[in-house]
Image (cartoon, rainbow, N blue to C red; front, side, top):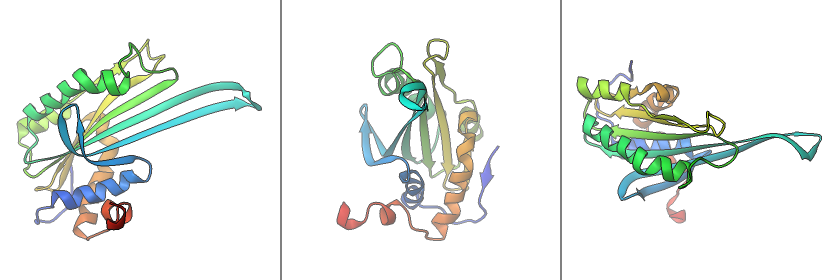
Amino acid sequence: MTMAVRGNRFVDSSAYLNIILAKYAKSFDIYKQHMINGKQYAAYAYFSSLGEKYVLLKKAKLWSVKAFEHVFFLEEDSCTPELLHELLESVTAYMEPVLVRKGEKYPEKDHMYTYLTFAVLCRQTPDEEAKKAIRSFRFDKGYLFSMRGHSEVRLVVADLNGKEVLTNPAGRSLRKMYVKAFAETEQGARGYNELFDPPEQR
């Protein structure tokens, strides 16, 4: 399933990324042109939260949960099955063991979930083989029978030529935001560079 914005003009990837990053910047730390495990990403966004429940006094804590998300932005000519295979390999070889478990057997105490999200901005419309690979892209790992939560990979592919957004099942909740960004980009809306990273702060 895809969603699209009508129109024929090609969407510039830098302008589109500028709009998307502004949406994340309200609650994520943003790092542009970020290197992770030897691979260059157009941007990287990181989020963490801690939820706690107490009874009357802080000494009587009922529960505590920690949630995390890492978003990796790529600007590519095309989104191919080969690229997706490379991304999945990076998850199993580095991102899950290092970013989620921090080199330990399990994530830290009170860990609820970690999302590893790939946002691929591609200039060419994915072919049918690639679309099938996008829909079937999956990684979901639980820890200690879910007592230490789980990690999951979300995939969003923004087709800058066809102005469509494709996702894997885990990434469906992000589709609306990425679709809306097409219209905002074409309208010349202010993005991350203007709102959060003005020249005097660079």
